[in-house]
Length: 171
Ligand code: FEO
Image (cartoon, rainbow, N blue to C red):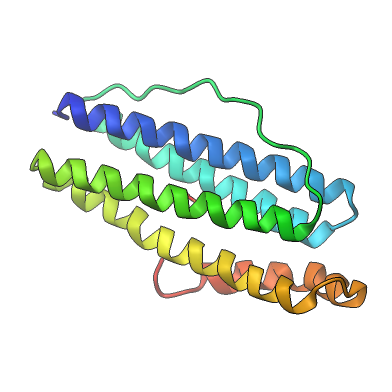
């Protein structure tokens, strides 16, 4: 049986993962309307991954005798000035999610809930990978700058970054 503090922390993380999914879905839609098809596919896929992150916690909470709460979500940001601004927002968001995950891990240790602590290790590893991927993307965008040809190639090639990431040994 989950302790109430753990159940509360996990339900909070369910909301965070759901918000991440919504945020990336809105980013994908923005990219699609700007003709950035590769970037849109990358972000649609990322939104799906976040939904899966949410679902894993929902099922874990319910399996362990708690009650998962499916939360109401605020409307995500849907306007971006540039790809650079969009991916900086994504990177900042992932850094903040990593901090949230660390908070859950800390509560698990405090409450001596080693089962949930073990469950959360998947998220710790996932965050390392997601932050690394977002930083790689930002490095590429900094290199490209305002170069239109570079942006064209970036949009064409970003989907291969997804493939590389999903094959990474950290998963
Ligand atoms: Fe599930 Fe990207 O945090």
